[in-house]
Each structure stands twice: as C-alpha cells, then as structure tokens.
Length: 463
Image (tube, rainbow, N blue to C red):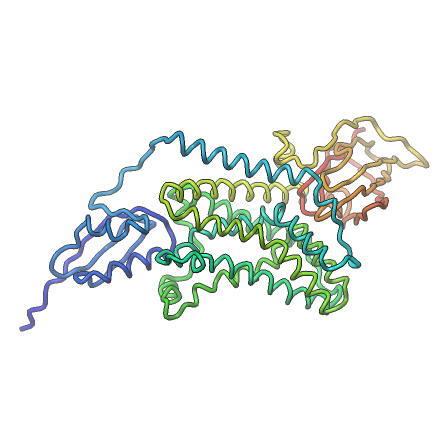
C-alpha cells in the first residue's frame, strides 16, 4: 500500500496589483516552496488556493517572500482601508495640476504654429514637428496608453534589478512605433493618395480607445470593480508567453507600438497625408519615421518615469494614482474632442472653463453679418490656438458665404468640419483664404470644429 502524504488545501486572501502575468508570477513563486504541489491565484477574487503536503505554508513566510512584489497575504479577508493621508493627497493633486496645466498651456500657446509642414518641407522639420506632437495631442492619446499599460509591463521585469531590463518594454514600444511609421510611410508614398482615413472611422476608433483608457484609469485608481476588467489572453496562453523560456510575451510592446500608426491624432494624420503627397517610397518612409522619432523622447520619458517611481511602495502608489488621473483626463479630453467632431453636445456646451474649451479664443461677436448680393458674409480667422470669433450668429433661410482666413494652422486645425452644416471638410492653408457656402434652413445652434474636435465653435441661426 502506498504511503503517499495526504494533500491538503489552504485558502489565503491576497491584495496587490491586478494583471494576468501577476497571477502567473504568484503561482510560480508558490510552487518553488517544497510543500506546495499546486497553486491557483485569482487577484480579481483576492484569493489564492494552495494544495500542499505536510506542513501548511506559514503566512509570515509568504508575506516575506512576496514583500518585494508588494503583495500581502492573510488568512482572513482584508478590511477596506479608507485612511486619508494629506501628504499623499497634496503630492498627487499638485503633480496632476502642474502636468495638466503645462499640457493646456502648450495647447493654447500656439507653439505648433511656429512650424508648418508641407510636402516640400525639409526632412528635419518633420522631426521637430514630432517633438511638438509628443508634448500635445500625441501625449494625450499615445501617452495615455503607455501609462495605462505601464503597470502590466512593470510586472514582466519585476524581479530584475537592471534599469535597462525594466526599460525594455518602453524601448520596444517606441522602436516598434518608429519602424512601423517608416514602413507604412513608405507604403503611403508608394500608393500615393489611394489610402484615406474616413472621419467617421477616425472618431469611432478614438472613442473606443478612450473608453478603454477610462476603464484602465479606474483600475489604476484602485476602484476594485474595474480591476476585474482586463483585456487579456486566456490564462493558459498567458502562462505560456510569460515563461522566460518562450520570451514571446515580452515583445508585445513592440507590436503595440507598431499599431499606434493606426491611431489618428491631428499631427499624425497631417504627416501621413504629406507622406501620401510625396509620391515617393523613400521620402514617405523618411517623413513618417522622423516624425515618430520626434515623438519618442516625450513618450519614452512618460514610460521610463513609471519604472523609477515603482521601486518604493509609497512612491509607487502615488505614481499609480497620478498616472490613473492623467489617463482619465486624457481619455475625457479625447472623448470630448470626438463629440465636438461629430457635432454632438460636449463639455464645451457647459461653459465649464478653458481645459475643454480650447476653441474659445474670442466669443464676442454676436451681431448679424452684412448681406452682399443675397448672401450673408461671415469672416473668421483661424490659428493653431482657435477660432476668432468662435461664436457666430446668422439668419436662417439666407445663404451664408463663410470666408475663413488661415493665420497659421497646424495639426488638426488645418481643416474644418461641421456634420450638420455641410458635408466633407474645409481645407485650410496658412496665409490663404478659404470659402464655403451653405444655407441653414432651421433656427438653432450648430457646432463646427477642427476635424479632430480639439477646438470648436458655434454658428447660431436665428429667424
């Protein structure tokens, strides 16, 4: 008769970061214990089920083993802590306000108007254009994604002491981005005008990405229910790719970086359009790769900062809260912009302040425009920082001739759309006047915006 030791089962409660690779890490480290025969971790449920032979794993030993991974074990369920730390609150709030203020100031400053790109621009200009994009709309969209993923990427190299090793996901992300921009830029130059992003497709894609960013931000802020939301592979696949012998999981940031080519931001699509206009496979590739290289310093800084902040537990918690708030801000910023672009009501309609009202440069013109040859003549100046005026009144039922003077647009401001007033878009060229004629039959307020919705205005038709 076989005298095999009897296998017993123990349930431990656990608290710490949520991610699929984190569960694999926990299970691996538990299986290294001599008495543990199997382990099943579920961070969503906050439990770990351990099957063991002989002596039950000591709770103090488990906490010592997992201390460096910031996981705590208990034999009873953890009580929710609602403690308030004023120092943490002050640091988090102050840092968030400073970063958001810098972002808003750059958006409103018109810095990008200092550099205009066109198909005849020299190649170094596209690198500088990328630097500007990296501190504005690209930071809002791509930077938000990097912050959203930084927690999971950090777990890939949690046990590594080398900063270079821990930097690898962020380096791979930017490398994939630069290479894919060069490859796809070459294809754009080759097909020369055959590919065009639909405005509806662009808005829908950004809305989907931004909604996912909202969910990621709630997870980062520690809202437990949203911690259950994760886009992950099945666990057996996660277990496979997280194995260092296979190493494949660590190249996922490279693929994600390459995929950002298809995330439309105003600067990116501007450069994509110029790569199309180049009509040359080499020129198109160089235009796009130099632009991506220009965005890399800021995007890399965003990613690498998460590594330094993750070493100390308190600093790590602060950074995660700051990152979560910033991801949420950027997500709401992007969603608000797409609501503007699609002509829907947005935060701009609430008159809640300058953060979301990037178009409100001047709203002081309320008089009705003059009528010349049976048409209402409306004049408006457009720059990178907004519309002047951004609130216009016209008469319903009388044709409108809209004269738009481009005083220096760049990025998404180089085209104007209004789904309710006219189809297509009004292309703008710095230093030139563009015209559009239409008639508003019904009184009401009609929104117009740049094609990415970052700045907007209103035309009100009255009887």
